[in-house]
Length: 288
Ligand code: BEZ
Ligand code: FE
Image (cartoon, rainbow, N blue to C red):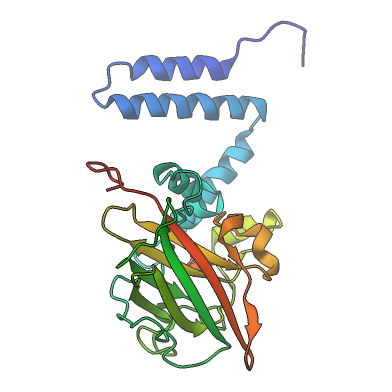
C-alpha cells in the first residue's frame, strides 16, 4: 500500500553496502565492475518489482543455459550473441576509423586450416549450388591497393550448412579457402551462392527467442578474415541484399556497408564485387 510516506530505496542501500564491502578488495577492477553491476541490477529489480516467482524463473533459465552447454556447444556464447553483447564488444575492441570496413564476429565455424587457393580458383569442392563469382578488392584508407593480403573466406552451402557441421555430407574444406591479393589488391573467388541458416535454437536461447517473437534465421552471408602486414586484421561478413532476414540478424552483425547484391550473370550464376578497406595497425597494441 502506498501510504504517501517516502520510501528508502532498498536497491540503493544494497548497492551501497556491496560497494562498501568490496572497497578494499585485492582485485580493484572486479570490485568496481561488480559494484556497478549490482547497482544496475538492483535498481532494475526495484523498478520492475521483481517477485519470488520472477527470481525463480531467472535462476531456472540460467541453470538451463548452463545445462545446455558442453564442449561442442556453448549456450552462454549464444545468449551473449543473441542479446547483442558479442557484437557490441566486437565493435568496441575493434573500433576502426570512419570509412574502414567494420569488424564483425567470426562465429563458431571458422577454421585456421582452410585450403590455400589460387586467385580465381573455386572453393566449392562438391560443385553443388548456384555459381557465384566474388571480385574482392583490399585497399587502405588512402584508396591504395594492399598487395599480398591474406584473404580467408568461409561460408555455408546452398542448404545453409557449413562443411564442419556436416563432415559426412560435405568434403573436407568445402566452401572455405585462403587467397592472396595481387598487386592491384584484387582477389577473385569462385564459389556458390550461400543460403541463410538458423542459429542453434533447440535450447533455452531458442525458447527465449520464440517467446520474444524473434527469428533464429541469419541472413545469407559469407565470412572473411583479411590480414596484411601493417594493418589491423579484419574479420567481417558480406550479406545478400535480397535475404528477407537482413533486418533481423539474431547476431546483430549486419551493417549497411556489408550488404551486397548478387547480380545474375550467365547461366543461373551470380556475381558481386566488394572493396574491403583496412585500417593501419597501431604498433605495440592488440591492433598490431
Ligand atoms: C555464423 O555466422 O557462422 C554463426 C555465428 C554465431 C553463431 C552461430 C553461427
Ligand atoms: Fe555464418
